[in-house]
Image (cartoon, rainbow, N blue to C red; front, side, top):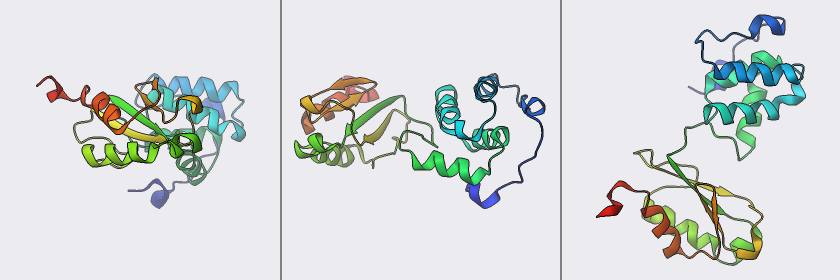
Length: 180
């Protein structure tokens, strides 16, 4: 169910009354500290979402609701911001991530072919994760590595001057049957 289809009413409790999550998950305490540091201002939404993604790995519905309540914002606004920005994810990512830069320099030098090869060989579309949870395929508008275009990022490691063959070889190292 989409978070928008069941937008709950936001309670108007003082911030001190909402700093305990019923699950006891200590990651919610991290969100509380971030919201408190920003004095529960609604303009701190993006910073709080960053902290939530860092703590939880992705932004699940429960976390979005918690943030909406803490910042006294409608859930629809929190969901809208979380889905607008490309760097926020509402789904868990794979054990490994491959980011293909689609900035102008990378695209001109063949990033589209890199992405097409990955999608064809992995059976994934951008933003998806393999069914076994091993690899997530993500794109970025620009990673700032224009001098080594086309570039890709493998688990945080930037690799330049990539070819469809080189990105597929890097990904296949992550797959369980790569040793065979």
